[in-house]
Length: 119
Image (cartoon, rainbow, N blue to C red; front, side, top):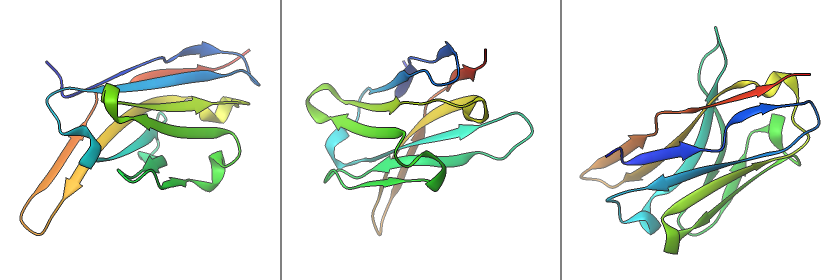
């Protein structure tokens, strides 16, 4: 079983909304920072949003005011609520869980979920 499993991608019209989910398995979820990244064809993977175990969030400038990252530690899940989607948001979206200390670096990626924004 994959450690991180994303879902919720799909085809949506410009201006529409989607909610991505990321469910973690076999992790002490609450200690991990969770982030969403995306990769469009021919482009490098980029950070979209991140949320620490404390709940502190960070957003890329290009999604501020449109996307919201959240987490539910009781469900071992994180979410990315995407509003006012634009064609340039089309990409494969990946969930990442990371926990780093001086002695170890746990870094997990999901398999990705496709988001296509098109009329």
